[in-house]
Length: 214
Image 1 (cartoon, rainbow, N blue to C red):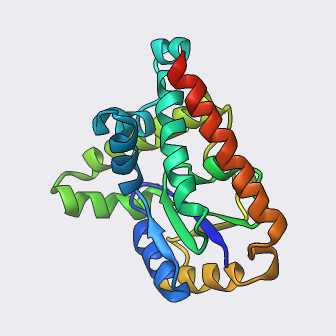
Image 2: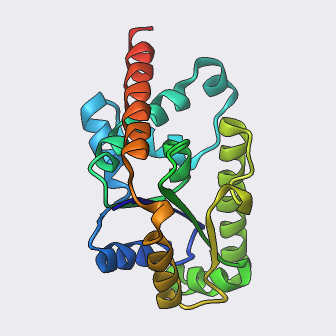
């Protein structure tokens, strides 16, 4: 029993890998639907929550804490799922939301730009130059998001327990590796790590309450 947070680069097969891992381990699998749930629970436009994750905070956001508030609401919703245990979360920066929980397996799925360019070219029917420009823009936005909100480099391998380059291994190689590591004792839920999750969920619940009453 455990939880896995898969942070994935844009067009690095992360969604496919996460879903296959969940299937192999018989875990639940959650991603962007968390945003829809948070939108309904906290009465926030879904688009506002999406922008909170996709765009780096503006000067106004940093002054008002707008994006941090939206992210905290989404974090609270995600933690409700993770408290059930046996869950794979895949998306953007999921490991930030479960910081300090010892049984969390933090995975980064990434790939070189040259691997991803042909995928975007085929999907969007654009030139190589346009695909490259698009991917660099997305990568830069995500890098700024991590730097401005958490003061970290999102792609720093030291933040993760496992880093997989999908341009070097197959999807099934990645799935097999994640599953094998997820079964290790140190990534199984213990009474102590369960309390860590419960304490974190309570902390975030209080944080959200205080944000809403300001």
